[in-house]
Image (cartoon, rainbow, N blue to C red; front, side, top):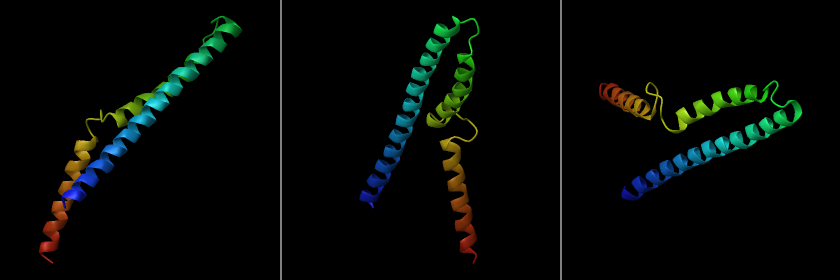
Length: 100
């Protein structure tokens, strides 16, 4: 049983590290690509029309949602809510099975 708990904790920790790596990879790509687009924009039009901001805004929305998911910043449907609901459903099912 103890080994199972350690393995379960390790798997959850590994999944968390993978989530963080994906987020930081996405953020790094965002900074590099948007900086490149800004340079292209500057050298082609001299910022007369800053079209790179459209890409920065669109991708930035995705970054914000990715951060909310990665760092559990959603107060309504975060990890605590999920765990609470899972326990609730498990106890509800246990009660139903007792009567059968």
